[in-house]
Amino acid sequence: MFWNAQGIAKKKNELRAFITDNEIGVALLSETFLKPSHTFNIPNYITYRTDRNTKPGGGTAILNDIEEGDIDAVFNSHYPTILAGDLNSKYPQWNSKTLNRKGKQLKKVADERNLTVDTPTENTHIHAPTGSTDVLNLVILKNGTTPYYFETINDLSSHHHPVIMTVSIEASNIQQTIRTTNWQKFEKSLKLRPTYISTDNDIDTAVKQFEEDITLALNSTTTTKFRTPRETIPNYIKIKIHQKKLLYKQYKRTLHLNAKTLLNNITIEIKKDLAEQYNNQWNAKIESINDDDTELWKITKILKTKKKKIPPILGTRGIINNNFDKTDEFANYCEGTFRPNLLVDRNHEKFTNVINKQVHTEYRHAVDVQETTTEEHDKNPWGP
Image (cartoon, rainbow, N blue to C red; front, top):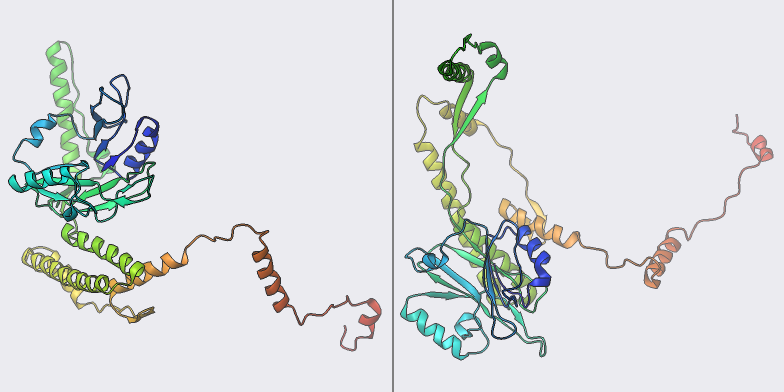
């Protein structure tokens, strides 16, 4: 996350709650307004600061939740590197509305050193006097090929919005080891041999003998299973799904045909990618089956069992059969249904008129009914 704080001292708790809630690993702060005499620390984060002494304002800070190291060495290495922040470098190619001197300089340096400069698509700064908006936050990448995406959030007190950059790192499919111990059998099988201690060497011998007895009983009553974690959706598909959500919101807001076209194209891409991913997973599973393994019997049973087909649903776009589209339809329905009631004042004139109208309509044919007297009850021919 990178953010122009415009003074961080009074926003410490707000920042702490934000980075904790969003699980931020590295926070890059500019315009901290801190001086060397100021103390600023966030629990579980290492803080690197450069304070300005010559004049008011300025200052940067890096909050890092990893172990302390030489950051300068990291940036000068051949490893993939990310530099992010409010660099006041404006260039139209980077979603800025204007062009300035720093933008020209950075563009020249990036081209010469084969660096990638990228920015969020949404505005990250609001100019208070005029209300104009622009994109000031940018990212410089070196040797980076991993997919990533930005998300601009207006959750902190500043004219500069924080930007969350999510970098997708594929996790290796490591086999898990599951050990299960039957403690009742362990208690019965544990046989501690008697020991006789008279010297210091006897103590060492007794301890070693005690460890051997426990290990023997533990191994005889523990079973070990190996399980491969379930396959997950690759990160490049997750990024496309995130982009689809953004395009859907953009289309609903603007109803622009270009947004609709992009939305349809990325929807088709996601379906193809998912189909290819699941097909590759299935082929890998079939190839890994051993004839002596019970996995073959399990897969055969699954294939021979007839599955009940989930019926289609009627949505806003007509009949929907695809499970992926059903999920989208349900999400849109929940988003439109579960909204706060804006009419919170029950003494409001509009609320009162609505209730009175409903009551009058519901009971307009009602008549006053008097209670039955004893004499009327006695005259009732159908009484007891």
